[in-house]
Length: 258
Image (tube, rainbow, N blue to C red):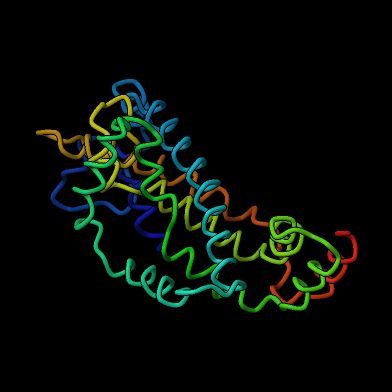
């Protein structure tokens, strides 16, 4: 896992003449930062980064919230057709994205959201995989905690916010990481929904560099290395999260909820 990242770094900083040598050097003969300077000056990289950040952050907030609500509904409520609907959502996991690209494009175009951030975010606002994970996690939350809150007069949304969410920190952390990773690296749908170069995300910018007639692989590797930084930087700072079976903490929340 480390070697590909090292090779990207080595290619990004090695002198241009060494990139296409017949015998590849594991260690560059010298370090040059010209590729990074060239990428940042020739292309609107900061604009692409800004677009990626907006799409990823907004998508994380919206998708995680929707997935939590849907997963909680499937885990703790009984209603007609619940299992059929849940299996239908699971069935969506087997549908390749290529099958739904054209219908999604037609809907987004009809709504006038092409070349906008919302046009990229909204079609993926609810993830079947995320709903499945949340549902499986919330099944383990004791029903007694929820029933006690109802007896104390708490409304359903208050129960969700004050009882369920504090006990769901581990799955929230997983959803945040996965959703950010998926949105930051998403390529297929933004390639269809975004045609204006100023609206490109980092993956589309990488594809633009790679698709040139004579691509400068030093520049490509420099931009690829920069695109990895947000994903790599937040992992060491993740706080320790409580386990899903922290029922005593949930009981204390119930006592404070009325």
